[in-house]
Image 1: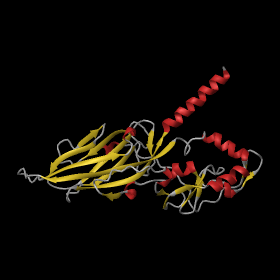
Image 2: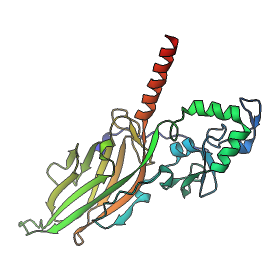
Image 3: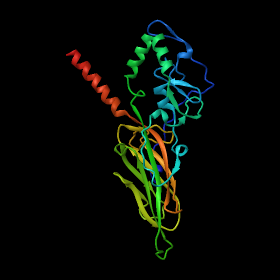
Image 4: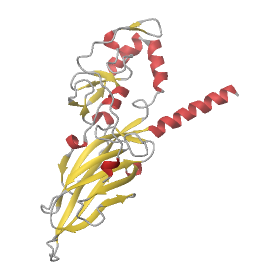
Length: 285
């Protein structure tokens, strides 16, 4: 099984609601940054602040980096014909708040941003340079829709009780980011481990009973899942693999679930860093 060979996920300490507030710090323009204007995660001036529905205020990057999304909790059962891809902002994805762990969403606070820009112009400019102007900081964050489920049909009994034909599938709204999908069937099947490197990411079998199918959606180099379920790949790629589980359904024509998740595109970050390096080289020469 792929699960047994995977490296343990890295976990990072998170601040808690009981953590003492950080002290005020001196801003680059000489103005002292008030404690209420500091992000509780990075302890720096709030940069592009977002406010959660649970009442916390954080940097947009800190929210994107630390807010965990669970595929299991985000799963909604939908009709098999559901295939509409609705564009959604990453901030619309439900996630666990880094401060209180409540399932929440976050929205940009434009008024707060204007106040901070006016109050600390020098420090704000410094924060802009630190983040490089990247969307959500440290790479572009985007929302993706993942569907998984199975279709089902009855077939004639082959004498061994195998009278159900089913197809397990994984679909994703942006297939271009997927390296492969690893599917693990029950060990009683011949060749229970299946790897699909191109869509459709599915497998069809004939059997007699239901069981839990395991799947791992592995992203291409430069992409990572922003999910508490994500695992590092054996080659060291951080949070590149998303484990999923699905209980086969032999009710009617089958069943399907849908979840809205987040991924980060670090390729954009690296390309911008290289562009900055090239610009510096041109200036020096």
